[in-house]
Figure (cartoon, rainbow, N blue to C red):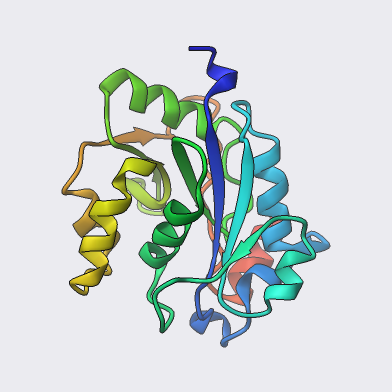
Length: 207
C-alpha cells in the first residue's frame, strides 16, 4: 500500500473541563498568538504522513472551535467523561480505517508522529499504537492520548464505556497495543510537554 494513501483521520481532544487551568477552555488559550487547538490543527496538517481529515472533540464554545475550520463534535457521553469519551466520539464520526488522537494542550508534538505510529502498528499487526516519551525524571512513559486506533475498536470501546470504564490504559490493555518511544537522537525532549496550568503554558511558549 502507498503509505501516503493510508486513510487516517486526526482527532483533537479539547473536551476537558480545564480544571487545573482554573476552568478556562484550554484549547482556546493562546500559544504564540494563536489558540492552542489551532496550533494543534496546523501541526496535524503538517504531518509527514498526511491525514484525510481532522475533527475536533469539544464540549463548550462549539462555535469558537468551528471557526478554526474543522468539524466539531461533542462527547456522546454526558458529564465531561474524559479522553476515552473523546476517543469514542472520534471513532463514531471517523470515516477512515484509522483514527489518530492528540490532545489540544501539547502544541510541539513531532511532525513524524503519525508516520512512526503507523509504521509500528503495521509492522506488529497491532490494533493500536501509542506514543511514549521521556518525562522530567528521565523515564520513558506512554502518552496514552497520542494514540493511533483502528476504527474496528468502536464496538469494544462502546462496551467498555457503557459499563462505566473511563481509564484509557484499562481499555487499551485489552487490545494489541504497540508502544512507540520518541526518545531517539534528534527527537525533541519537549515534544510531548503539555500545558495543564497557565504557568506551564507560559513555560511552553518560552521554549
